[in-house]
Length: 262
Image 1: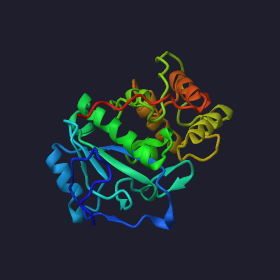
Image 2: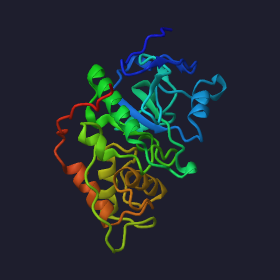
Image 3: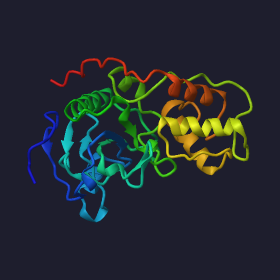
Image 4: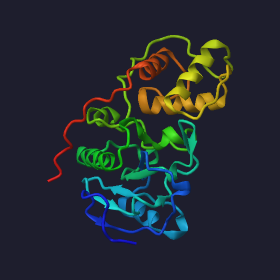
């Protein structure tokens, strides 16, 4: 395995043994963002390089913006786990995994430093340019594994990434009073909600029942797009934010120049 980094933005190759062949010759077509969810950067990096842990990523972004590469891009890193998006499973075989150092929810979900976000933006723009990845396929771990994963969390600044041509985003509709759609409800409104969530990409099948799977996916949507309240209940704010997201033209904003990494 080479010690050369695929991205010129990576300061060095810091190899993990946890990777394998990408399956069935599938092309790389998405980037999945994670937080490390551990108390320290050192502990997170050690775990991602521990053969017994059976987890890894392609890139690791420190709080100061330093980028390390752990797995070559042409190899299948073990970061996504059981996952689905747009009807496809095994996202490990089609994605580049980026771990962002942050202690996560267990550590109080502190803000991501701007230097770190600038590094994530520059890295994703570099990967996108080399791999021809559509901008909307920069995804959260919580998007592709709702209920099982909640990273990079509701504090992650998707609006800033979107300004740089990365990911999907609409300004969230403000919270308002009113009775939400909720578990136990059924009918055409629930069917429309489930259809819109599936249309965006979530792994939710058709149906008219607001079941636990629907609640789980609604919470994942809120965590990403309407983080003011993450409760899995489809209130008016959630429904309107989702409607505007799926109805907006599928034309990404022109990407801004990547942050200066000099």
